Image (tube, rainbow, N blue to C red; front, top):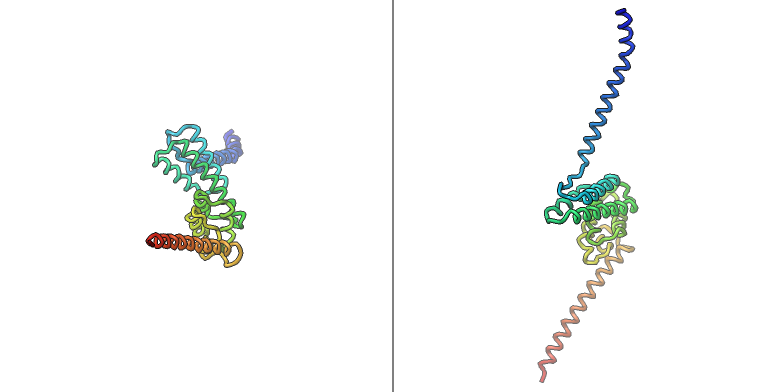
Amino acid sequence: MKATAFTIALACAPALLAAQQSSASTSASTSATASANTQTSVDVPAGYSAQSRAKIDAAFQAARAKKLPEQPMQQRMAEGQAKGASDAQVASSVQRMEARLEASQSAMIRAGRTNPQPAEVASGEQAMERGATSAQIEAVAKHTPTDRSLTVDLNALARTNAAGATVGAVLGAQGTAPATGNAAAGVSAAATGAVGATAGVTGAVTGALSGAVGAKKP
């Protein structure tokens, strides 16, 4: 009788061991998933409305799906809170930023940058927020050597875009663009505009002086 019970126990041992291993694996997987969710959770202020929270969560989920940098979006939320912006304003700002990040990344990929770095994507987004277009981002990415980060040129574009500078002028100033083609045309146009502006100022000054001299004659 004891031998039979011992035999049954031995026969059941593998099944029990497998069940324990399966349970342990499931528990580990659940813990890992919970940990991952905790690490990627968005810290939305408790006072925000359900609608604003949903918009912010959706923006962050879209960013993760596209592997976009999330830090700029988190900073935008913090800035909004610090400036006393409403939850609706913050949510809309975060959504717009996510859209620009996505457009920045897409422009770089179209230009041949298959794996743009987070800092590059963020710099492109900043340039677009200040008026640059996705076509300009793409042009910068195309003319910048692949072994060089786009951050410097994109930061320059962000600083000068409001003044109407062309991509060629920006790249020329950074020493990135060749002295031919569209880049040279941009630099030439910028230089011509500067000369024209100088000539206009000179003419205005000359006219003013001539009028003043004529007014003194009897």
